[in-house]
Image (cartoon, rainbow, N blue to C red):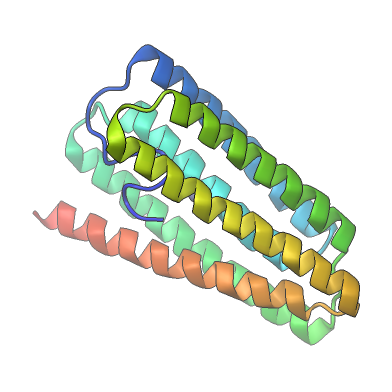
Length: 203
Ligand SMILES: [Zn+2]
C-alpha cells in the first residue's frame, strides 16, 4: 500500500466524468465491504477478518481523496494522508490488542463465516479492479490498479487460508497468525504514510 496505491492518489490531473463515476462506485463498494467485514469479524470472532477490513477502509479513503481532495491545494492531500496514516496505525494496534485477548481467552473463530466473507471480499476487489482498469488513463494508473488489487486479493486469500486452518485444527491460532501479518502490514504502511505526509507538510 504505497502512496500511489489503491485509488491512484498520485495522479494529480482531475479525473474525467467516467473515471469519476468508477471512483464513486469503488468508494461505495469499499466502504460497504469495510462494514460487512467489520460486522462479520465480530460475529465470527475472527481477528484475521478484522485485520483484512482495514484495507477496505484505507482504499475507501483513497477513493475519497481522489474524488474530493485532489482538486484542492496539495496541503490538503498531505493532511488527508496524515490522518489516514494515523487511522491505519491505530487500527493495527487495535487488531494486535484483540488478537492478544483472543489468544489468552482461547477463542476459536467460526470458519464458515470467515470463508464466505473473504470470498465475497475477493469478488468485490476483483470487480472494482476490473472497473478501474477499464477506465484507467495511462500505464502508471494501470500499474497501480494491478499492484493494489494483487495485494488486496492476497489479503483475502490469506483469510481464506486462516478459515481453512481454523476448520482443520479447531484452534484459533491460524486466524491470529494471519491477523498478525495483516496488522503488521497495516502498521508499516501507516507509519510510512505518516512519515511521507509529514515530509510534505514540512516542505
Ligand atoms: Zn487495497
